[in-house]
Amino acid sequence: MTHEMKVAAVREATHSVFEMMLGVTLKDCEPTREENAPVHTDGVVALVGLAGEWAGTGAFRCSADMARKVSGLMLMQEFPAVDQDVLDAVGEITNMILGNVKTTFEEMLGPMGLSIPTVIYGRNFITRSVGRCEWSVIPFELDGGSLEIQISLAKSTPKSFGSNHKDRLSAVISMEV
Amino acid sequence: MALDVLIVDDSGAIRKILQRVLIQAEIPLGKVYEAGDGVEALDALKLHPVGLILSDINMPNMDGLQLLSAVKAQAATKHVPMVMITTEGSSTKVMEAVSLGAAGYVRKPFTAEQIKEKLAGLF
Image 1 (cartoon, rainbow over the protein chains, first blue to last red):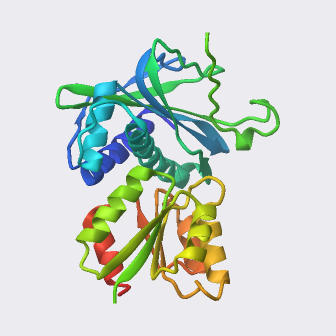
Image 2 (image 1 turned 180 degrees about the vertical axis):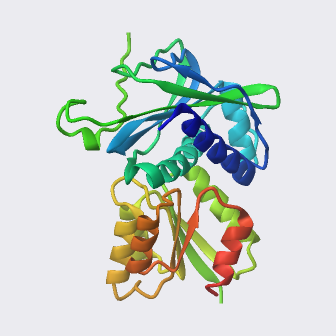
């Protein structure tokens, strides 16, 4: 599974979701590869886990303003603030994009499971993926703002995260300091 | 006669969109009920018999395929058409849903026209 294949699958799925469900066309931006998981510091991040012989994580990331905008387009209403409806809409957009990416990957890699999305909103937070893996970061532009899909996928090995590697899904620990 | 519908999806956003599509569709729509997973759907069906169920597959507690099996196993609901509306696009899942008795299968993302066409084929 090459970086280029991941970029192609993500772009196709993301364009399809935005055009069919939100009625807008995104502009592609230059994708990048990162050695470790991209660090998020604010805004909205939605995470889904992919599990199977190949396993990994997919993420949708954007600013709070962009989250309100895409949710408004999807639900045809204004959102003055990031609320539960916005987080729900962003989670569903992520689910649809990564669900379609998963279907494309399954044709090459065999059956995969997809976790239910976890959506995080805040400021000054850090997300970190345990372990070293390559991430494909695929950005898009919408009306001068940006959003991006990040995906990491690697072949599972018996050594990875214990014996239940086939069932490995994303987990988020939250703590207050 | 008005058609009562149950929409089952863990996303409130999708439930809202489907409700809007149903209003736009040219079917005699009655009441629309909502459930966030299969367990809530079965509870709702005990209280509110419906003529159509639209359901996601990937949901917590009880997924859409388990719900489909339960609906088809009960005498009171086995004749109710159930259309799966889901991101699960693999042929295995589609075949499983069809073999369990799904009346239709629509992949997310969808357009309002796709949903209307699917419903037009049922009524």
